[in-house]
Image 1 (cartoon, rainbow, N blue to C red):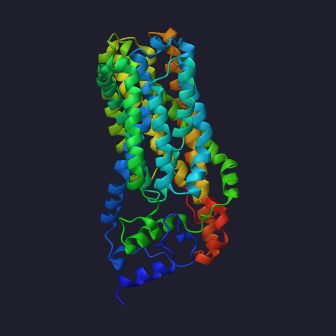
Image 2 (cartoon, rainbow, N blue to C red):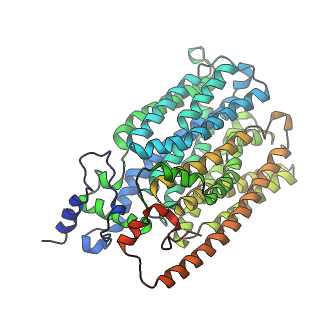
Image 3 (cartoon, rainbow, N blue to C red):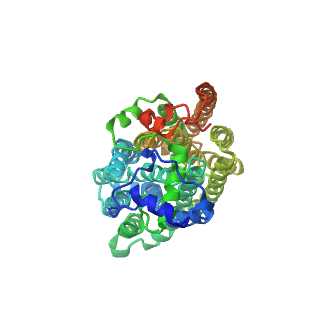
Length: 501
């Protein structure tokens, strides 16, 4: 039998090519040795990864771009008259911002559990279809109450996308490949920040069409685009490597087996106790707080950067244009940080470094009212805080064992971060013009908190790896596949699971 035939036959025995795509096989539970010799299998690893990237990342990034546009376009709409037309006072406007994040936080963990139990290729489009409809209807609200209710439903329906896709990508890529991919995916948020202002300015030119103000068309048109993308997603998205139609049978086995190198001995079954393990793991809660320390300044930037630039003396239209370059710089830094983190196989030190860069930006915004200094501060703040998002998400995911715990834990981290969005909604009220001292000071404090927690976690995880090395040395021989399966419910606590520092 040829080399190419053997793995195909073995894979059929292991259920890798199930006729039902909703059945996600579990190669990690098998006691066989994973087949990861690409040359022996006749697989070109780089070509397979490149093919996977092309089938997953562009569309997922586009979906997140739409998501970020839809949650933050209220800032652009407000710049073009939303509050004035609806008669909102600053407190009511802030409440409409905050209620989105309250709902977002509440539904992230349940959403990831549904996706784990069901199918990503179905759950993600269903979520998108729902929030696209809500977004479109937001364009016809007539008062504060209507806008508030629309933002509530937008938070509920959008909640699952970022934590869901972040978890989903960990089911395709190894631990030192994932950060670069999440960085590429998240860079869509920075592109959304840059593109959103330009798009809003163009759409606002429709002011008066069909008797509707320009800011209403921002919601309506962007919502319609989301609905169309959701419908297309039912045919474009995939579930997992073992059911992906774009992979050959041998490539399916190879992709699944190479993931087993990172996750062998960790259960991938749907057991509620794994969700409990995530909720009681103090390390995950530290990552939750750290993530909030980075995401809250990101939301401040995305919601209020046009306002901040406008307070430097520019018109609303020019403020939209001048808020774009910092986003471009942030996108470049985000992708570079993702590549460097995977290449060096480190997370914590880079988190600390970018937290310092963000802090310097907010110090400049606090320290001077000179336009050039403030604009430079905006650049540095964006370049510092945006790369932290994929770094912390991938760092936390790397250190969770088992797919359900990882799904729940990732959602916990991201939901706690989005709780920072509630805080960000009240940090830059119009009454604080023109310096916004309070907002900048809180963002600076959050950067400092992220730096300190990243340092503590780096030292702790390095120490735990030393202890695990000692246990392995005392054991004398490598743990067998049978021994690992016996301890599959222990997750990352087993001695052969190395933490990412």
